[in-house]
Image (cartoon, rainbow, N blue to C red; front, side, top):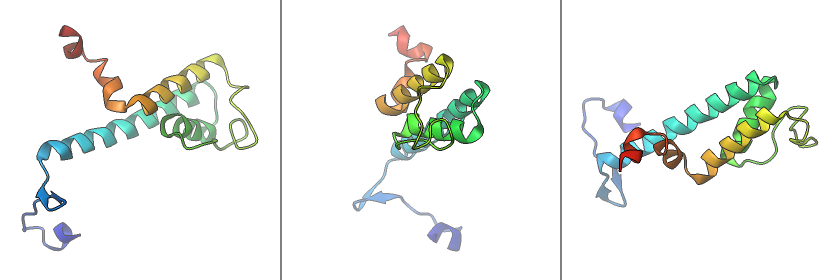
Length: 117
């Protein structure tokens, strides 16, 4: 809010009174970007398997965020993941791994630089 009210003023980000390094801001922005990207990619892939958009979006949120039951007829509070096809279940498993193991670590495993040693 202060930046909007005084756009010419320079602000130093602080945490507990100490200046926050730029690397911390970049790490947080990277995490948020990859989280949102993986959520939407998973939702689109689930929708491509034939799920309706409500079930696909809530299934992606359930898998990545561990937020409980999804919404919709199939995976809603009164439903289960049992009627889903194998491809949808594998996509949800991948989403659960990404969400629970840490998004940045999973994506680092897919970079060639990591495997060069």
